[in-house]
Length: 99
Image (cartoon, rainbow, N blue to C red):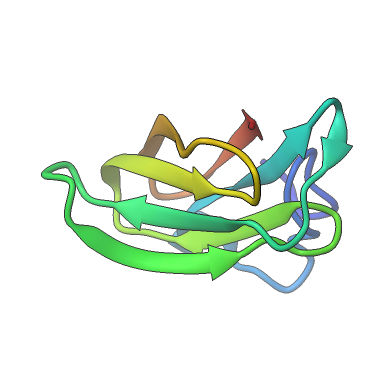
């Protein structure tokens, strides 16, 4: 992926994508962004690794080691949603999560 604004996450202008494994995206409900949600990064065994809040635009980003991960999204008045994602060095894994 080239530098610049990404489809789901924030811009990547200041990120050396080639040396990173990036997982980013947006949390939506009824096609609108969900701010004040939390996205957790769980390793392949289900262990908690990290958590970030979504922006007002529902965006989130993780810098993760290459491999298989689970994103668990916790948003107000919704059930938790899990999504599997694969992180690869030099690539941006874009994820759209509907809650």
